[in-house]
Length: 131
Image (cartoon, rainbow, N blue to C red; front, side):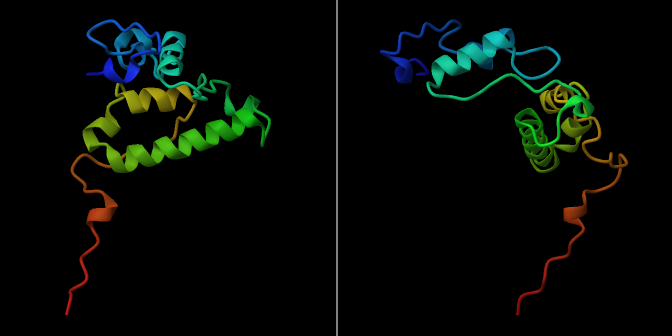
């Protein structure tokens, strides 16, 4: 079914139609996509502006530069995803894809770690009684 949308684009896919950016060979073991994965994504999504991660240390980036702004935007977006869209187990797992990608972008201090038996803050809010 994945081949249907790619007909006529001259894209040959392996493994039953799964592009490299979704498979292990297109992913970097330390987080994010490798060059092959990015090339695969660009082929499948013409006009895409996907580019490599900003791996320069934040102290070496010029404040307000294009790379610094990309890094700041990515880290804010992914930190929000980590907080709201992942389980507590995934958020604590150092080998999860989200934690690997945040490390790759030099985002070390993402969120304070919750104690193992605690509940997240947003569940502590009591509902307002209707009436």
